[in-house]
Image 1 (tube, rainbow, N blue to C red):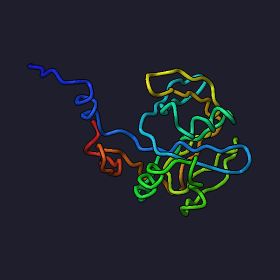
Image 2 (tube, helix red, strand yellow):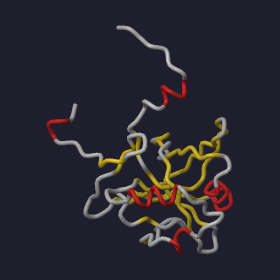
Image 3 (cartoon, rainbow, N blue to C red):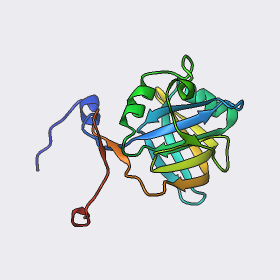
Length: 173
């Protein structure tokens, strides 16, 4: 086997697909925000925890620090417009829930809403932060987990275009 050496940025462009999810936050006074993210993962089984990387200057990170709560909602089929729209605006300047018809339901364990149309939603309580270059990795204890009924296909990002994550039984390795 032969290998070609690439610049790190060029190689990172080849890592797709990755999950598309929303980081959902609140300010403690009833105002909600969300932003799309792709850099998230499970980081512990016991206790159950998730982690997400957020740019150090993001409004969502400031809200997580202020309230100690956040949600991770895996985007569902049909939410590509919301992903694009919410990713091109900052909650510092725009009340996204007032400016866009974001359907949501109350969470059960935190002040974070559940985004209707998502495949999965996790309500988390801040556990720790780890500086990581221009980002901060935020870890959270899962306080509650929810699945859409009926189930919804999750979306994946293929470097700027989105597709449902659907596997036929014959496609499973």
